[in-house]
Length: 100
Image 1 (cartoon, rainbow, N blue to C red):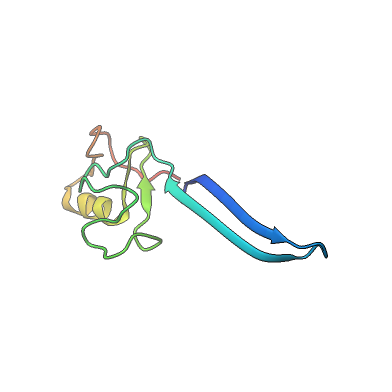
Image 2: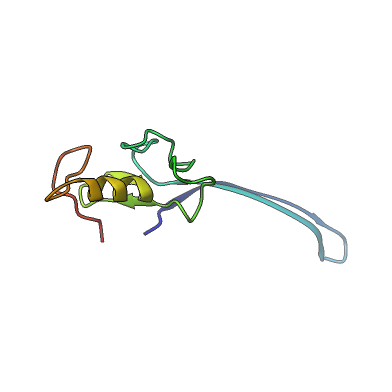
């Protein structure tokens, strides 16, 4: 599940009298649509990546729990695997379940 919020979209184009677009320069930016700005486990920004990854992007997505708390994929997987016998959300201590 990926949630993104598009913040800015800017177009620069040059149209000649013939009506054809000769130059098109599009710029866009995005951010994760999360209520917090940082991961509750590693405290790194969601726009960046977790400590295990080199670059942000599709290899380090955000994961939401049923309680609506968001974490980096690698951070929450480590957290869940370290909890025995039942994993809990690190923020609210509710039983951890991935949001569907």
